[in-house]
Length: 386
Image (spheres, rainbow, N blue to C red):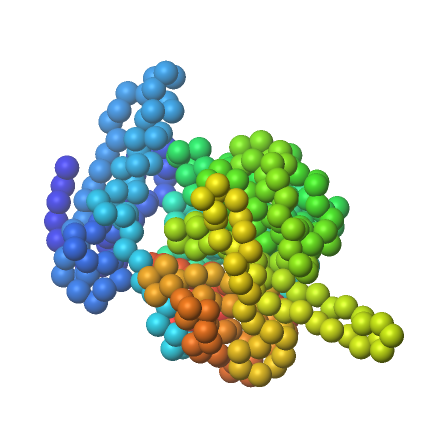
């Protein structure tokens, strides 16, 4: 083992045979975060060589040990340190080009949702009209590969961390031939780079129980999928994809997420109804809040938001997340072309619209950098804000 001082650019090199020929540079934490300005003075370069003797009976154990070791090196003993979104809405990076609708790699045609796998160190973006999921490196934002969708029009994504105790899973829904798919993320990434033809049928399970599958979230080995056409959430077993239960919603649900403690379920819904005999159109655009009861049943608690263009109003709240540090509720207010932030008490805290967002859809918070990633849907680009 060789140890020497280094600048941040060198970081830590991990090069066991299981990871191929490419070098893997991993930051190690010691009471600091690698993105802090002081990181340059506290980094060391560590060369690690895997000298284990591989045996068939120990392959899985060896893989598990190396993955856990790699995570320890990357995130430290206490796990990764997360940063909040500071809400300055300073544009720091973008992917794609505004107004450029194309199928070439690193460009988009109606990007719909974005999610992060910290374990695989990737950003995943559903490229709706190109019928694929594009993959970028979490730290460098460089393009890696594209995953062809087994059905057209992939929309909402979800990354289920450690679904088998070792790997992440990717879940997503498609509205053409409505289906929800679950894949092992490592497997599908490898196949997309080496054998695209095998991607479609490599899923763990596939469910066709939906008319219009929308937002997806996972809690306690249960997958919650919004079915906007049937005005309900369908709850599936995470291992098998079998239907377990149904939660009815007053109007058509789209976005879905849980509170950090998984005791509160948020559902974004909207619907337009024609009132007789005046034929007046009445619209509902709101966030429904469900609380878990003592019997572990989801009970309606309250709702907030109403339709309109003014501050505090919503028009198609298609995607939302919770900042785990600040507990702020961040909403993609799609048809108002803005991002709206609510306090933990569900009161309007801040609204952002720079006149450049065009029907923003999926949003995601990079907890390493505190960057809010936004799918600028009809501008065919991805924007990174701090």
